[in-house]
Amino acid sequence: MILALNVAIGVALLFATPQLVLQDQAAKCNSPDRLAFLQAGDPAYVDAMELAQTLRSRGFTVKCVLRSTMEGAFEGLEGAALYRTDRGDFEALFLPKPQTFAGMIVIEEQQNGRYTYSFHGTPRPWPANRVDSPRPISFLWHANHFLVIRDDQLRVKLEEVLNP
Image: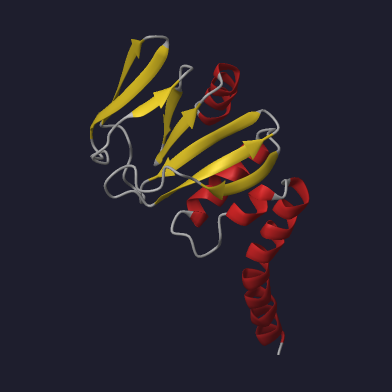
């Protein structure tokens, strides 16, 4: 009887957890963001929530975890997420574990005050293979994550907490 009750509670929590995460995000995110929450059915959801938990355990306030426009940017990509935190926003791309971005090479070019980034190596980038920006972008590899960071102070903090 007790075992059956424990199993029932465990199953209920398993199904309730994604809903609780979404409710927590809804309280912290602005209205337009609410349409783009990363859902439990998204392939990168588990990795995205693990990264969010790691950040929370190391002092970040993760306000929202949203779908990213960088989904599909690399061959074999599991998915991508946009993080809104108390220290700034960044995107994270995820490969299926145990794959990593260790074979990725990022090339930066500056022209007419703009920054253009191209990618080489593994995983293979999407055919367009260009990111254009008015400001420098930083990239950080961590496990099966590839972080795209547009704020240098945020990059420093993320490096500190993810690569101590």
